[in-house]
Length: 80
Length: 416
Image (cartoon, rainbow over all chains, first blue to last red):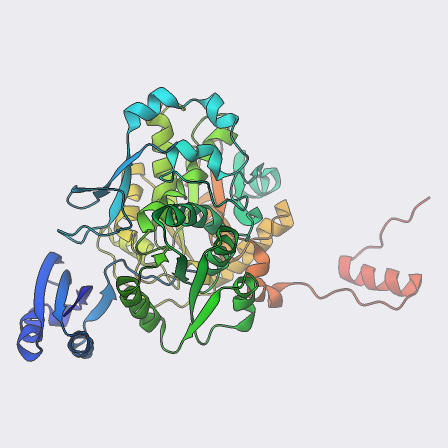
């Protein structure tokens, strides 16, 4: 089993959608929220995903397809 | 000796021992190095620092590394009084911190020197990074000096000229097919899987501390006093926050009198998530997709963006975003007035400075320091089309005089 820490940033139109719940239902993943800041028009959630690596990658792809931005927890790693 | 005591989560305050970790296990907040300031205060003095080497390692007591430094001569770069540029902008006490003259021609040598030293101390055999330029150059150079293996990840479409400045030091260069986001994601996964020192991931708490030395040096070079106003380029926001931390530490330690400097963050408009949040009056960074010639500042999702916004608020600073045209003008203005050829990040800083001066937001008598963090030959393509063509002449005096009169509107004064 692998674990990955990620940050989801939600655009306004997805704030009311239960994306993380659906992620846990549609994929064989455990979602574990550690920190979040969600307002009526924007939000981010830092969470850990646990499961097989391929399942994590499939889950992340699905979340991105919904319109959520997915970033590594340390922010951008590629520097100038 | 180092007085680093532990790592502390910047979000929930939990403490950790000084290990190669970067994130709080509880809340996933970033970790920062804490020091035993009481012991440091008893130990440190201006004199002790002044007797140290002419590199960042004169501040070794204030850095989180114990071992023999991996030192290729980073730091203690000139603080130039910029009288010509100051006159052009109506500022009487303007200084340039010229970090172009570091060993690999950017301020990254400061952070990487600390990261490489700490990584060797931890027993790592590989120094890694993902970079499109300055960071890669510095990691490859320091790894060579330290006898560590260097692994440098770059996007596969990066221009050959950008790779040369790293390739020369003999690292393993890994060109990743995919988008910028793909490189980010891959590197974060690799850092979890392999036991490497990834300078801005698992040794980031130590790496970032190297930037404090810019704050220390400026205060020392001003005669042990803090500037009134710092104009700093912002990418991840780490440099910006650490310069401020460095100045505060000197005051806590009684080495300077505390005067809170105004901290201004300069970004390129095409990648300005920190300034955009500041303009909105928010602490919530909205990630951006970079589109600017200032590649060394092109971080769309800045790791320390939130903390940079806190420093802006605490110091009543300004967030300034400038266009690419202004960046080129800034590079030229700096070169033509002070003889310093900066890369695009320097152009961003000078353009931001010019904007603030024109808008009357800088008191002409303030001591202002503009941080010029990298040398111009790294981004020569940015200014190539903006420079005057050479004056082409036949090898005769008549041809020369005619051509020069056309260019300058007057003949040069002849001797005798």
